[in-house]
Length: 76
Length: 113
Image (cartoon, rainbow over all chains, first blue to last red):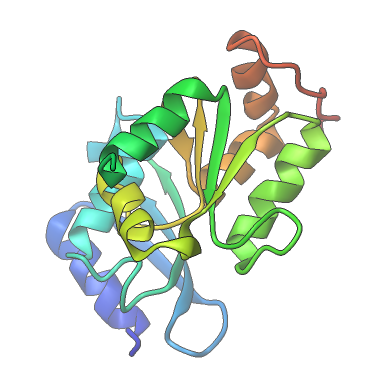
């Protein structure tokens, strides 16, 4: 099972319309990606909360279909 | 027998530093888990490790416990600190050492890059 980068980006942007999303494929197996997500809606939130917002956007795929997503988030 | 939630709750409340990981510090079964092990060992922080692969309930339970979908998970004084990304980011910035020492746990200073 795997996901492709455009699918991950689409899901994150669906939940965070104002986000800038950059996805890098780490292993070419559809299972290991790095994502950089910048969104003003992260302002005032802890890193953990920011990452949880992104995981929620992926609607349960994180940790299941998608094995690894090295995540970096920022408010601006 | 205590529920998985109670087991996890007990682990994080009775040990200062707990790392839920895949495998053991000697034989980590996942690159991300082994990265956090190396960070904790570099800092010289004493910690309790829990191998979530030993039980499917534990593996799912730890994700439900703190609404975090992946392992490894690091807890300090009962508080969820983060997974591999956050722990590495905090380590590189020196924030992890500050977090530990503020919580009264001895940890080596990190030379700033």
